[in-house]
Length: 131
Image (tube, rainbow, N blue to C red; front, side, top):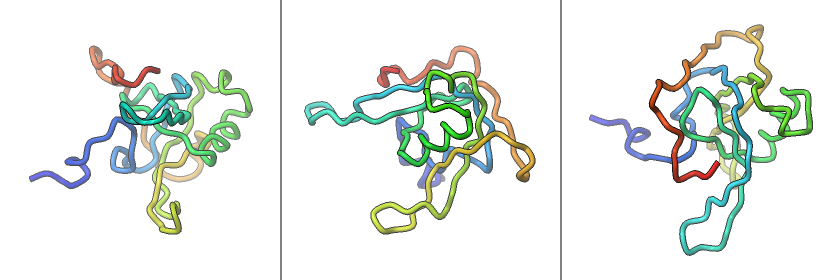
């Protein structure tokens, strides 16, 4: 048997990829065209973490949260910084409460957290995502 979340694959991090609060290290930030082939370009900001092979699509809320957590408005300063990734069940989209990924400063003072190990050697980043 497979869980529905396991059956629906994604190139990008999603809620079901995160279990609790996860300490992550920012390895790259970039703007990527996420449009399907043949569609008009649709550029989104993304962040990669050393601990995951899939990048996370950033919305304006998470961009601001990373800037605050890293104490810098410059994305180049974010590289190598540690933050905490978690699921916020109260995130709204299009008027519905759907939950979503959120980022905050990396502090163990706010309850139980866990650290995910780096990807095993030989696991490459998703090649069809150009950053």
